[in-house]
Image (cartoon, one colour):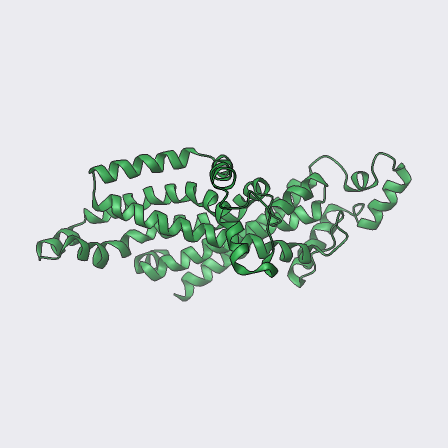
Length: 316
């Protein structure tokens, strides 16, 4: 396990360094100037230049990149141009909404996908299988923001069971807070659950055709005992990979959904910061999302080795 884990850690570090360079360079080449936007149309060239020097925008790109990396390693992400407050505080404040939203969405995705995928595989080519796979195809085709609007129309406008948007805050109680996140989580989960359900079904069907599964059935094990005792562990390898990718993707997917439901989360902060040309906030938020994707992939790789020792052996 030692060489395998060391190789994965080195890959993780190299990927994070590459991601930081890409994020910094992409935002550097974007047109516009934060100092000009902050000063407005009335700002004189001298005032814009003075503000750019104050913000450090006149320094060489290499120096600003190194300063940014050192700041990330020490926990100093700098101050927002638009909000005049530490970026770390802004992100932590917004993550108190975005992380629970992503966890709710991932929980719904996992439960729905596993139930649908396993049920469809157990009833291969029967009515239940065909019907559920048809529904998953529709789920994949629906954009999550459009599905969010349908949920608002049904549950907020017609039935009036939930609020159409906004977040009361955790200080108002866990119940009202989670209730306001239920529709956004559901709109995020449906598309991901449809994808994961089809992958789960395919993985389970592939394993069910293996010789050892037929042997277990020939020895008298029931279909349910064979499924839960022999099939699922091996079928979970590709499923866990997709689940890992989806968990990170759900964090990024909150950008659109949070704006639809007017939720003050990390996604809305990124959207507002782009509008304000607050690049230091955008840079740190995008790097955070990229780090989450890379770290989740690292965890998935380690879980691969735990579930299937052949992966670890072939990698060394």
